[in-house]
Length: 404
Image (tube, rainbow, N blue to C red; front, top):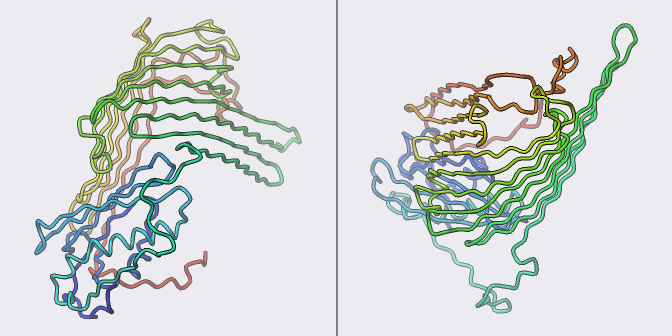
């Protein structure tokens, strides 16, 4: 364990902790790792600690902590992995990450003048509880179940609303197979009283189920199928059912997915529709074959992160009915203190089979009770942030944090 560190800046290794995933608590890391100087900007650090994560089959999280030497420590790199179980508390996660970061930073801190203050500690295993030589028997056979129920309500003198949501899922993940089964449902109701005393009630509902089965085929290939069943008043669907076998290729090995990912997937499926109201094409029921292609890129590097996906969907029996979607999310450190954050999603819509025939009422349009006809949709955002001043970020002062 480290002894108290020198208060003189420059005698300690300068560290920038880049941890944007769940379980991160930067204030906690500053107080628990006192033998380094925590820097506000990556450009001022000698060690960039990049933390990424991905879910494990048991419902937990596997963290990958990358130690990247910079400046006078350039070329010194290391990678450590740390797994936490599903039942781990927020304190378990942050304390585990802090412990692993301490261990990884020792080799860098040992090269500084303050390295002489470091001490190594070790806790031997208890003689009464020897380390097992084989994994303990899992009574659940790697199955993980999750159930959630939520209700929201609110109101004023002339308006009130109720929102109910629930979901349940069962998942099993191994190196060779991945299974998933989920159910979800939601109900929304709002009531309004107008100035003339009349009242209006609005409600929407949706429910559904989904199934996933994936077989691993080497380090780069996967095959499987997706199935879904749903009902939605917003989409004019009394019942929707889809089944789609899928194949996916990963340019980089799946084992590198926490830092870089580039996948191409193709699915050919069939969809069955039962509509609440007759559609603009004069249908109450129909079965249509379709295909989709999805390309996804995701990089998390010292300079920032980027996520990009492109999807194309078309009906096999009518290519004029198609849809294309592009999504991009970028977090880029331009230079010291300046960062660029953007996200954008653009969709071209030519496959709105479910649109109800007839004119929508003003209430339907204003309250978004039904999907509107449109040839496109988009949303996005752009932000710049610039920070300057002291390069150090060691001090934690939580006073008045709860005042709003």
